[in-house]
Image (cartoon, rainbow, N blue to C red; front, side):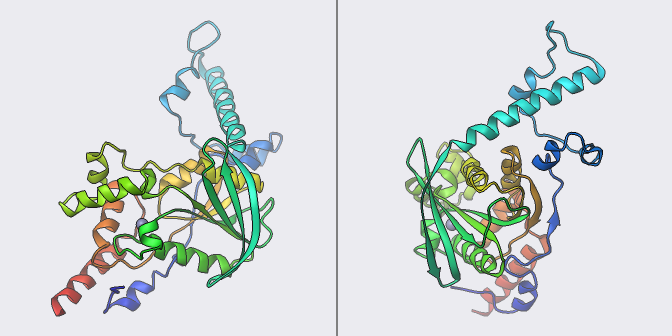
Length: 307
Ligand SMILES: [Zn+2]
């Protein structure tokens, strides 16, 4: 793989998933919510904001007479309705998957337990790669990774999926407890065939987002309800999530899995993947450090001049 030459040390100071952790302000915390009589818990929730879709909020302001309730009544009604929406979502995801098989798997990264979960509707199989005793854990080290056949099997240089997966497994092995959840949603959810069609468009100058749109797909069709269901299966209370993708944090929290901390993950780009990194940052809101990207770009340009 074409690697960065000069300034590699500077870039590697970002580490592979070893960048400093960020505390995440949870939109809601299941444990806190259950401590209804704990005044400390209540006060800690005063700045929390719940994401509300228009559909979810539409009925929330309607009083029994069809008029909008006022003041604290309206706020209480809103909170009650939001709680109902959330608890319904949380209950529903419990039935998304069934626990199917589990074994110990020795790997180059360490010895893990691997558990297969099957989606009940589709029989699609997903994998939980587990280190240590995770049942009922709080602040569990978790990486949610989506399948990338081209990257992980063929070592494609167009993306950083393989590097991120390997970094996550290496980090998992350093933890006492943790889990990498491997979701079978290739090509940001559009499937292998359509991903290859998108790559063909990228040969014509489209970036990763415009290629998806040209094919009639959204920018990112991945969902994380299955990941939440797997975490719920193990009764995980909250997670330290290894990700640069804010959508993953929001999704987990929406499905009742609080993200206590975000752990950034940095893998070095190459000349083929740098544009993909930049598109993910500029157009999909991924949280790459600007200095990291600028240094990567400069280094690759210097290397290209030399060759
Ligand atoms: Zn990939």
